[in-house]
Image (tube, rainbow, N blue to C red):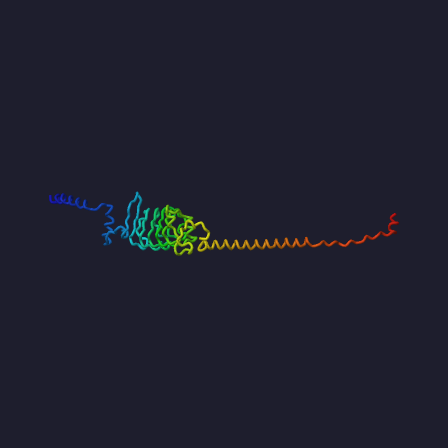
Length: 273
């Protein structure tokens, strides 16, 4: 009787204990935490002032006015729109966004960017569509940074040097509508270009007077000078040859002396007869 009562008492208690156990999916992490004596790891939290949102069904990471001086860590790799505007970013290093394989829109406006690495947008060639670099301190950008990109870019409100490199960039990208008039030559440009809009000047060869295009232009000039020198030599030779022949034709002809005809010997004539 005692044994039966013990069994009947123990079974409900066992059921209550089993019911209080956590689900099987959470049991293993709990055991690991207990075994290591640690605490549950918390998910990576975005930097202060940053947050993740869903905008029009697309994952968006916003860090506007967050006081950032570098590209923050912890950006979800499924981010499609990234806003880093109105911060204190001074440069973009190589591969800064290569861990974002589906990034389509990148806003770096209203920072203090003065330098872009040639590989700043490495890994974004197949996805990036919109890039905002407006209102920074960019005087020049490497052409390599835009190689392979099919993007629409805003380059306005920067102190551009208006050199050949920038002209080549404009040949590779599409400007965001209404931003072309904001691309103005800054203090680092030639004195006669400061304050002028770049687009009306972009087709002029004089922009390639220095920098990357300068070497190409110098080579072209040297080739033209060499060809011009050879042309002058050929013309001079032809002129000399013509004048020399002209002098020869003006000289009086010298007649060859006529030798007197000797009469044949009469004895020879009689012999023939």
